[in-house]
Amino acid sequence: MQRLASDALEAHYGVQLWVTEASVQRVREERRQWMSWREAADLIGCTRHAIAQLIEQGHLHQRQVNRAASLSRASVEAATHHYATQLDKAAQARASREQEHLERTTPPDDGEVWLDVTTAALVLGVTPNAVRQRINNERLPATRRGRRWWLRRVDVERASAAAAFHARADTSD
Image 1 (spheres, rainbow, N blue to C red):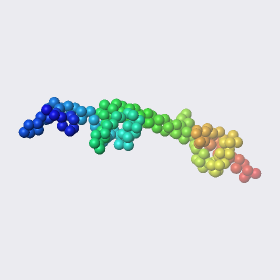
Image 2 (image 1 turned 90 degrees about the vertical axis):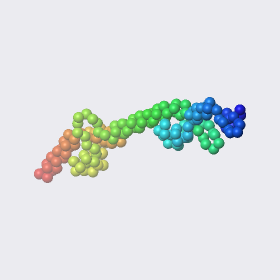
Image 3 (image 1 turned 60 degrees about the vertical axis):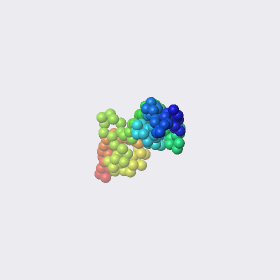
Image 4 (image 1 turned 45 degrees about the horizontal axis):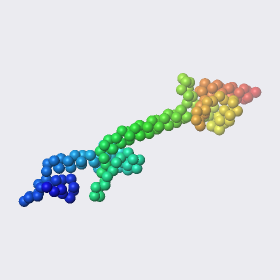
């Protein structure tokens, strides 16, 4: 009995070459313990680029056989959980950023009707800069959320009615 060049199969030489079933089973079992990058990417649900990153981070164990690199199935299965956890963290961070963005760019949610500066300017018949000046001079109440000002519709309508009243009073004199 001899071992073949692969050092895994036991062979018997005679007239023909015979390979023992036990050595074939051993080779099959060993091959089941390793997989290609593509198989790993499919199992994890990621790209080959992500596989390279997981190898760099030390989450995947790689071996080189001839020219082909293969990955340990056990490390791929463990990395599947790690990668899913990374995706969950990224999704939570993204959702948190989106929530913060909404809080900065949407009006307060208190049952009131809110107008942005541009809409308030249209109602008042002035420019958005004039509305901002009135806010800064505290002549028009407003709430700032992030970088945007929000004005209650009631306050804008009151200011519009007062402006109309004063304009009418000025013309009647």
